[in-house]
Amino acid sequence: MKKDVTLTVKGKFVNKYKSGYPLISKEAIINFNEVTEEGTIIRLVDEKNKFIAKGYFGKQNKGYGWVFSRNEKEQIDQSFFENKLRAAINYRESFFNNPDTNAFRIVNGEGDGLGGLTIEYFDGYYLINWYSKGIYRFREYIINALKGLVEFKAIYQKKRFDVSGKYIEDDDFVAGERGTFPIIVKENGEHFAVYLNEGAMVGIFLDQRDVRKRIRDSYANGKNVLNTFSYTGAFSVFAVLGGAAKTTSVDLANRSLGKTIEQFSLNGIDYDSQDIIVEDVFHYFKYAVKKQLKFEMVILDPPSFARSKKIVFSAEKDYKNLLKEAISITADNGIIVASTNSSSFNMKKFKSFIDQAFKETKRKYQLVEEFSLPKDFKTIKEYPEGSYLKVVFIKNLP
Ligand code: SAH
Image (spheres, rainbow, N blue to C red):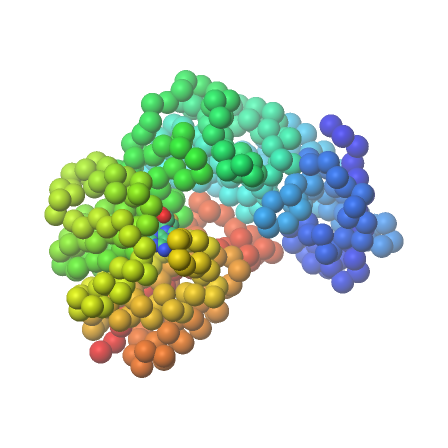
């Protein structure tokens, strides 16, 4: 590997890194320009040249690399990655042993000490997501470590740093025997079709597993459910299986129709008895208000940021208004499931959006329960931004 580069941390950031902050940012470094090559090992030191931590240089949307170790003697070599992966796999032991669920995350970036990298397990298939060229430089170590630690049908990868948005190439099949897609995975006894060969999104977001289960087990029964930003309809599937009277899934993307039909069918649900609508959610709200539709459960799970033909949606700016629209078509005592994966605001701020939305619509509400990331999406307290998922079940009081 290349020569290490020593970077000096500005005084006011030293304590942050000393106490375990993992993300390397430009603003924290005095001589940032000295590192140019992705994958370079970085030594962070204070202004007296005292060692703080070591990590790597890798540009991604969040920052410029991640800390790997706070032990100066630790080498970033094959056994380093083996140890990290082994610990990560051991931490998920209960998932590997669960007969009802065979899709979960086994490495969650900085939560497992490997910022810039995630690995997910789908019934014997492993999917590696590389979030920077820098982490991709360590691929031989990481892939070798994985191969040595687990049995697998195949390993696939996505280069999420590829700005062309072309995550998949032929060589993104890594090892094992090529799969035929979709593969059918199980989640709490239900089924989902997963495509490891179709771009960034594979058909299911594993971080909502606990929320789906809760909806199925405790909320859906008898309810008329609206699922907005529905993608492949995963929430709708769990709502129907929990006894929902009916679900309406709304997503802008053309692909969502076929994908939602596929997920319903896999679970023995007659998709003709459900509504699947390909439309801008904001149009649908207007339509629903005009038709005076009311839902007993409304699920809101927008992307952090989205651009449709007319509308730019940013969770941070627009979530309050999204909630106001939802409130207007939620029945008295109905439940709004408000979810966001935006890391640019925390739960406290999210709750303030909720409070404002209800105040401005002159409605009362009750926070019924909340969810954050499930256990397999391991996070560390030194990096609260990593705990991005916020889900709140809200009762729309009469
Ligand atoms: N809730 C889904 C995941 C949502 S992913 C799940 O649990 O699986 C975000 C989805 O929002 C994408 O499918 C995208 O097509 C859709 N989307 C983005 N902007 C939209 C808009 N204005 N109206 C409807 N859908 C939108």
